[in-house]
Amino acid sequence: MSGEKAAVERAVEVAKARGAKRAMMLPVSAPFHCSLMQPAADAMAEALAKIPVKPPVVPLVANVLARPITEPADIVRYLVDQVTGTVRWRESILFMVQAGVTSFYEIGAGRVLTGLIKRIADGATASSIGTPEDITGFKAGRG
Image 1 (cartoon, one colour):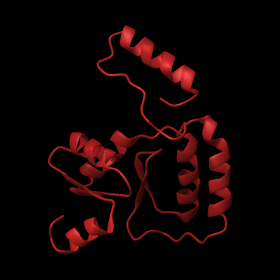
Image 2: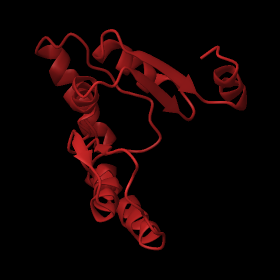
Image 3: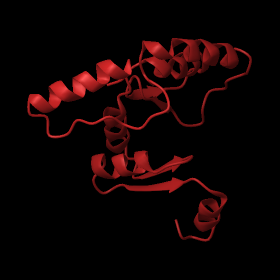
Image 4: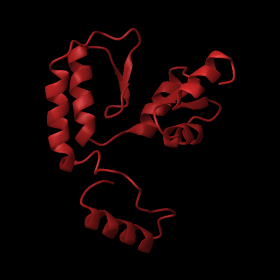
């Protein structure tokens, strides 16, 4: 859940009071995936309008749809939509597993998504690539 901090804090309290196994505030830098991020979505749309987007070699699984897309206009649209939209992460990972994906790579700082993938996709491998040394490790066969 994302939104105004006080509202999210109250939702955590209500969830715990109603017996939720786990409800907690996450340390995030912004209220991602809700209407409070509309200015960022607008900025992303403006930036993406300035660059050519080509069809991908393999389909892109849009995390707001949990299904693949290949049309450049759709890719741009759903990249913008994900800024304010609900992310269907678990469903997206399960779709990829059902499509035969067995290896996942998280590129960027952190390892949160790698951990989530390992819990969602039983038997799949997930690795985090966050530093130049991580890339060197993959080239050397240590990834």
